[in-house]
Length: 361
Image (cartoon, rainbow, N blue to C red; front, side, top):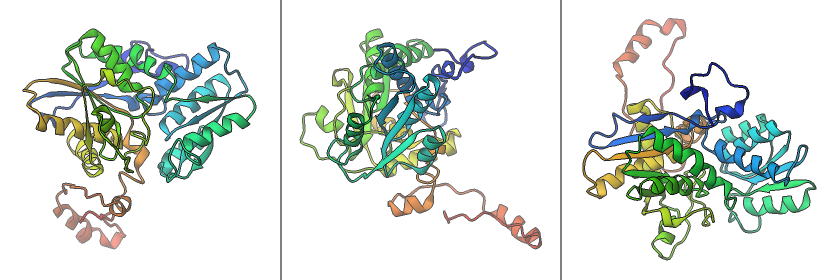
């Protein structure tokens, strides 16, 4: 796949050509002793990495005649895959029914509906793959709806395959093969598995490190330890079950990061790198920092990661103080020069000009 950002073409024929070949950015301000690079996947059409797998899974289903124009695609998703499936469904003339849960940010729900999806919202208290859970509901709807096809991103091999063929190849090319570590969050397992397999094929010495919220279960399973899933606030990753698409053989280690640390990292990325990133990006970025601090990996290591989506999808959660306070998230936010306020309050008050309310004080 080739897009306008990295191509000399002046235009493209359709939106699917904008999928992939996203830019790679060096994070110069947040890391001084290592070279850390982030692949900005919110440059995809629906602003997340999930466009890659969503389009490829639907394309392959059509090629195998498992679905055809006018049929209905059903998928259980926390939102980003759903948006990618909206793109694919609109492109191929399909209907799309998105099954999600009530803790998904309203911004994502609104986007799904705007793209034309029928959205089914399930109780987030229910175990995902048990009765009443969003995965279970999607499976039952597929049984009942005529001419429907269930896209299961947790088991569909085309999910990790597209990251092996495209995402991993892009990273290798953009980094000129000079990679010491690859860090990735774990959700469906598609990205870490596909990218990890490709990078290790090219250089078996590359370390693949998984990152998940503290409440997740992947690191306990990886270490053959007993585990219990605890709910967390990092949308789209580390559910209460192990996705079959996760290949633990390509993973060298998995670490857990607290919600508070993940959210704070998003604000640090805003302040230090001018990047508005989503919660899973904050999680993996904090994971890199904690790993560097915990282990003596040496200086000048080249570390690459992926920012799956953008922060604008989380305006009413990640970037909303009321939400943060209600979930006991304490943001260490550096303040601007408060002296600036006096000019507004002193000289412009009679014009009904005022400083926007700031709850950070």
